Length: 76
Ligand SMILES: [Zn+2]
Image (cartoon, rainbow, N blue to C red; front, side, top):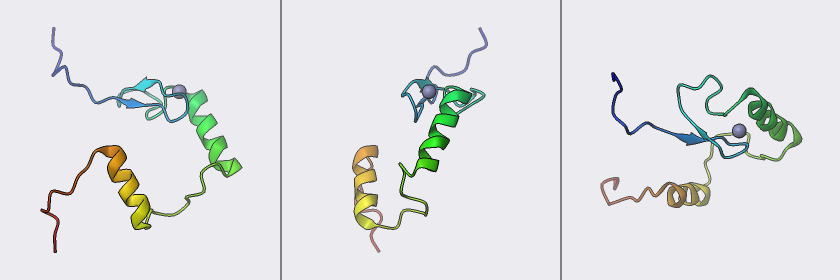
């Protein structure tokens, strides 16, 4: 078998939560249908954030979700 490392990066479809691999055609969605669903959410205003996230509190939230923790190496 000519497979690479087993650790393949996998993301979840923003629409249905199904696992999606980067090589999938509709990445980061599992299917064209879910891509359209997500676009529909944007159109309906479900997602209010239309500009880059600049709010420090939001950044903190994202940091917690992603498990990213500043270990002090980012100090001024
Ligand atoms: Zn999906």
